Image (cartoon, rainbow, N blue to C red):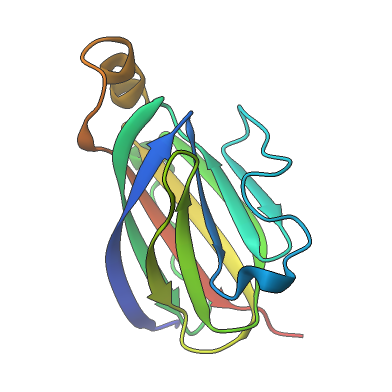
Length: 153
C-alpha cells in the first residue's frame, strides 16, 4: 500500500479562470504558462506544466498537494466536482504555482526530479463561479487535492 510522503497547503491566485503548476526551473520549458492555455479544460498537461481551469474568474483557491511513494488510494467520486489525471516531468524536484494575473507565487517540493503521475480533484466550482458573478473575489471557496507519485518505467 502506498504511503503519503509529504503534504502541503498552498494558495493559487486564480485569474481569468486559470492557474498552473509548473516546473520551478522553468528556463528550459518549451511552453511556459500561460502560452497555449485552453479554457474549459479542467486539467491540461504540458511538458513540465499542469494547467487548471477554475470555476471562478478571480479568487484564491486552496490546494492540498500530496506526494506519495506509489499510487494513492482512490477518492470518493461523489465528494468532488471534477477529477483529472496527467503526467508531469520535473528537472528540479520543485514545483511553482503560477497565476494568470500575478505570475509565480508559492512553490512546493516533490522531493526529487523525475517523472510523476498526477491526479487532481476539485470541489466548490459552482460556488466559485457564483462568487465571481456576484461579489467578485473570495478565498478558499474552490478547493483542490493534487496528488503526485513517481512514474515507474
